[in-house]
Image 1 (cartoon, helix red, strand yellow):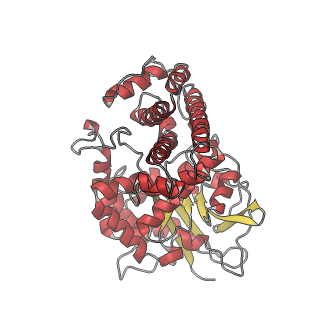
Image 2 (tube, helix red, strand yellow):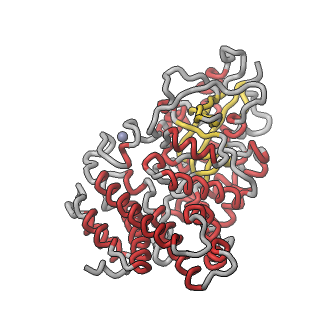
Image 3 (cartoon, protein in one colour):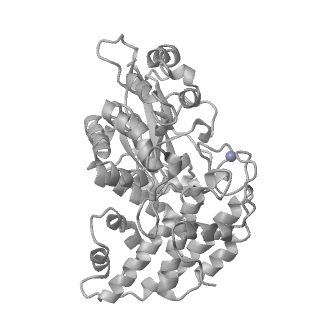
Amino acid sequence: MTRGRLVVHAHFYQPMRVDPFTGELPPDPTAAPYRDWNERITAECYRPNAAQGSLAHASWDLGPTLSHYLADAAPDVLAGFVEADRRGGGRDAGPGIAQAFHHSILPFAPRHDRRTEIRWGLRDFEVRFGRPAAAIWFPETAIDLATLRVAAEAGVRGTVLAPWQADTAHLDRRAYRVDLGEGRHIAVAFYDGDLSSSVSFDASLTSDAHAFARERIAPRLSAPLADGTAPTIVIASDGELYGHHQHFRDLFLRALVDPAPGSPDRGFDVVTLASLLAEPANRPHPEIRIRERTSWSCHHGVLRWGAECPDVPDGRWKAPLRGALDRLSGAIDAVTEAFAAELPGLDDVWHARNGYVDVILGLVGADDYAAACLGPHSTADDRQRLATILEAQRWRLAMFASDGWYWDDPTRPETAQNLLAAARAVRMVDGLSGTRLEMRLLADLSVMRSPAMGIDGSTIYRHALAEVGQPPPQC
Ligand SMILES: [Zn+2]
């Protein structure tokens, strides 16, 4: 038997906090003494972890909404992630993996949205890190077979899931493969639930990385699997744990994944998630089935982001919010397709949307991108109309960020952020097409109510607009 292996995966993510109307990040006094939460968490977590070199040994995904922030506000920190990825294993085994772009719950999304979110996430990774990603993090690890299939079609070879997302209670410490039909499959690593929750929630167990490795990890890696191969343990958690949620936990991470030279042999090696997921040519991973529509932070499937579940005291606002935004996105899509049909030279507006991430990444201007989609004889007016509808689509995708449904109450800033994205999208579309979708959105939002404040969703929407200085809806 070869030596046992350990993977430590950190999910780094911040929701988008920019004002969708201006692109500016407003200051947030609750993050004092820092300007805003992104700046504070960068100082407490991202910068020290990048500086200490841990990220070349740990595995991680860096969400696109966070990498955009870092690129603008802390380019030295983003450079640290890029350098760690380069040092940490090369093209197929590096520590970095992609993340779906807007952190939306993909099993709720229509198929073309799943495709765009995954392709944008892969493209963001490729542009930032200079190589394609071998694997992807699904937001909240929320998956179903259709989502896995869309990812595999986009070239994704693997992911990491919670142990209860497997359709069996008897998991070996190894990677598996999930059959996706028509000869397609995807590799899946299930993290160790016990060790991962110790790292996340038990500060006393993780004050000493050497003791944790000796007492908790090494004994679980001492015996080979039934087929004689070496076992691998995967620990997965939020990356912000390492320094932000828990001070000094960044030092624990460093000692766990990169012990100081000369320290005693622990009997196992630290490897990347990507190298665990890579299938040896002559030995496919064993097959496993997954439980449909499951996730890592709700034990009730994916109910936390669209219905009532025991994770929050009163989740009656969640289904109407999702319904309102689903109806809005369906209406925006109908307008989008009607517009696209009248744009000469445009083959497929959804294909155009998949490529629009290059505009968001600043690789190409919106007018040049529209020109590339419409061909050499396009008019300035048609290019403008296509650019507007694609920008509206961008915000219509952003309004589904999972954070808006995660917490107890829709008066929180995360839900306001989704509503502002919805406002940005709907106002662009109404302005372009003369529709009155914003009025319908208000009517749909008015049926949900904040448990904490008692106000309805249309009032929450108006407050969110007033907060960023936008005019109220025109009734
Ligand atoms: Zn739940």
